[in-house]
Image 1 (cartoon, helix red, strand yellow):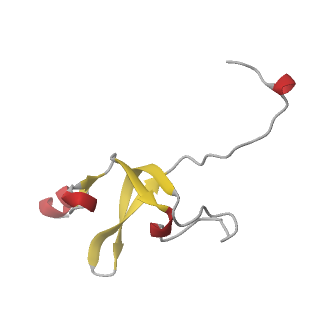
Image 2: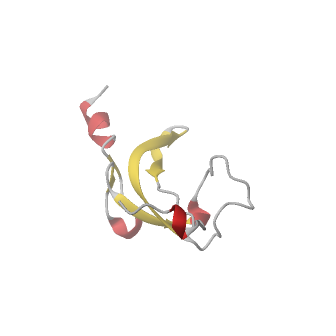
Amino acid sequence: MRIGHRRASLARSFGAGGIPTRIGDHVRFRAASVFLWPQQSSLTAPPDEAEIVGKVIGFSDSGKEPQVYAVIEVVETQALIVPVSDLEVI
């Protein structure tokens, strides 16, 4: 592995606003930008205009062009209805 390539693995050129995107950065993006929704159908995916927040945990190549895609870790938020009598305050 070349030294220059190793440094490139820590940051991907420039994201929105011309700011370098690095592993560990917290980012925001629209649902319409997601390339792959794992285990979700179009019925369960959020609307295209929904804003999603997550953390960059890696990068993926696209053919000959390195680090075209960021791998983002997100915490899925769902609203659940639970009887108050079953809740335990921690």
